[in-house]
Length: 150
Image 1: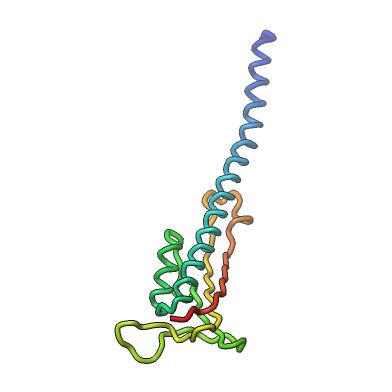
Image 2: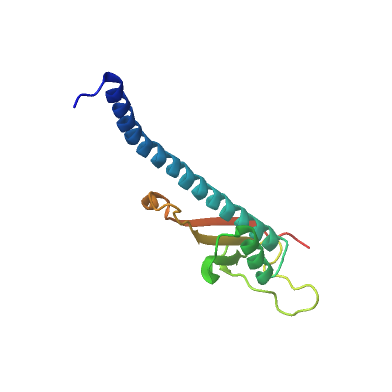
């Protein structure tokens, strides 16, 4: 059976398209994975910054944690993923809890001018699993601010 020259060219074009399309699809999925990874990194950084701002103005620990979770949404955060600590005049960091007492304005125990640190850990998950070895990574952000006076 003999094929004309144009039929052979169409067959070659089909083979070339099949080879090139695999590469283009992989590039497309790589761009999607990188975009999601970047978005999750920025989301976690912003959530940490918002939690730190709440800590710096003296909000209680529960409010700080809920603020971090609110801004990190839809990224799930485990209970131990948010670490709140403070340091008094350069001493070692200690866990940040609510101040003793109560009343209508509960605050955290950090005194004005103490350093307050919020650390948040999250996990980026690959969507396509083609590039899981690159994008299945633990994410960690940390922000330190000075506790403001009332």
